[in-house]
Amino acid sequence: MDKKKKTKKICFLARFRGLIQAAAAILTNIHLPNFFKGTLYQGKGKYACVPGLNCYSCPGAAGACPIGAFQAVIGSSKFKFSYYITGTLILMGVLLGRFICGFLCPFGWLQELLHKIPVPKLSTRKLKPLRYLKYVILAVFVIMLPLIVVNELGMGDPFFCKYICPQGVVEGAIPLATANEGIRNALGALFSWKTGVLLAVVTASMFIYRPFCKWICPLGAFYALLNRVSLFQMKVDKSKCVSCGACAKACKMDVDITKSPNHSECIRCGMCMKSCPTGAICYKYGFGNKSGDKACNSDETKEITK
Image 1 (cartoon, one colour):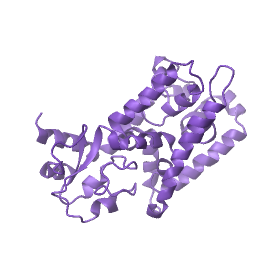
Image 2 (spheres, helix red, strand yellow; image 1 turned 120 degrees about the vertical axis):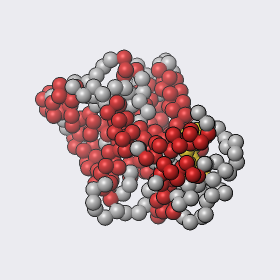
Image 3 (cartoon, helix red, strand yellow; image 1 turned 90 degrees about the vertical axis):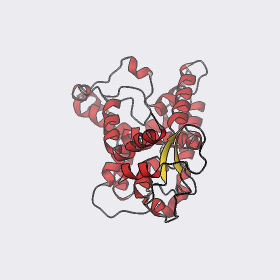
Image 4 (spheres, rainbow, N blue to C red; image 1 turned 45 degrees about the vertical axis):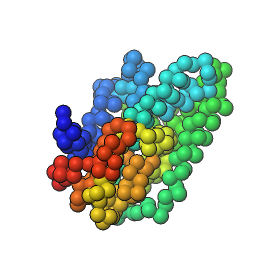
């Protein structure tokens, strides 16, 4: 495949992102009959981590949530599984970075669907310092507390999953309680607390684009740390850029891609590509930029993003 055709094929992703997100959500939760049975899939697939934030306790979940699995075993060096999970997270981060957030995360997709509800939208450009909250949550709830507070087997308590993660309520508690009377009768104060967190995120998502992703998600924080060095990158052709600012205005993650093409907050959604009047922005896969600032074949990019 020549360079021109390769660029056009990759840009195809931005055009059909919604379909890719839907497919990823279904494949991640492919065991659909379990939603009606009120039981969990417990096969060998649960030994593997899915790339996005997807609750292990979801009846249909085909794999384990990387954040949940990491918390469970981080407290003990006895578990080789902890090295596997860490390696998996790093590998996915290096291969794709926050492309996972923009294309493969079920909860990210849910927030985007909620944001389509026709209510007034709020800008978060003046709230950029809140971005760092998710790194605090990653450090404290995902690493420090599970590392320090462990049981006799050396396994940590999943503090983030237990006290914060709203995805566990959407995919786990609500479906299981609906279909399983025993679980329904066992719900208590913790479920009420997490339901409140869920309602807050759902409400905020209608007015703000991906608030959980921007400010809270520790998995997004981890991938953000690797976004600048990931193989999946954004490129700006400086010879075609006219500095019109259209891309910065279009970015709902509050990133100016002309200043920082692989910013930690960029989820590779492609909105900047679609807004660019000269086709100066494109996806590139691989380390470095062999052609310097002339990274994109603008004619091909414009054709696919019209």
